[in-house]
Length: 184
Image (cartoon, rainbow, N blue to C red; front, side, top):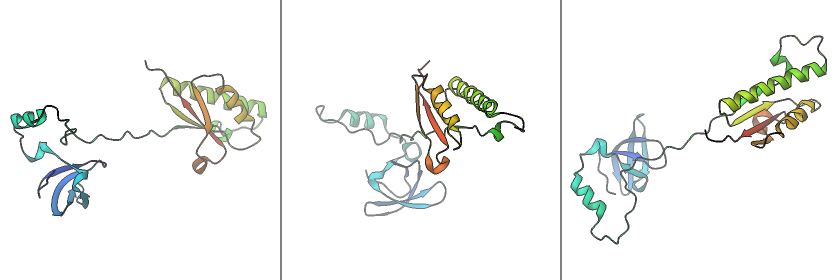
């Protein structure tokens, strides 16, 4: 496609639009809406017809049909670029006992484990009801009792996948669950 200085364009791979301010060979220099001049190959740009010129309907319709009906047409260059779906960050549930209650004096290990498991079950139910697909349970390192209890709890469900959470972010003291839910 041939571009001219002043044409308004979209980029194919980025979520960016702007005006062509300079052309050197097949390289077009785009002035983005943020005021930055960025170089793109002409093949990476699509004309924004809503800002450039009113297109003649009959000309577009005839070009769409083509001279030769056996000839296959390429997808229209006037289509807007598809925005990439951003992945939602997971819901985080910190099960460290000092995060759950103010004072743990007088509590046995069994009592603390019950508080942590009750919190995990309540947060899991919340995630299912709100259709949250990823939840990170931060259990800490310790002796591994809470981790084992969580794994035992989640293995009852067919629609749950349990994995270690991102090591760079959580270390070895967290697990991430993926909840696959049926469409309503």
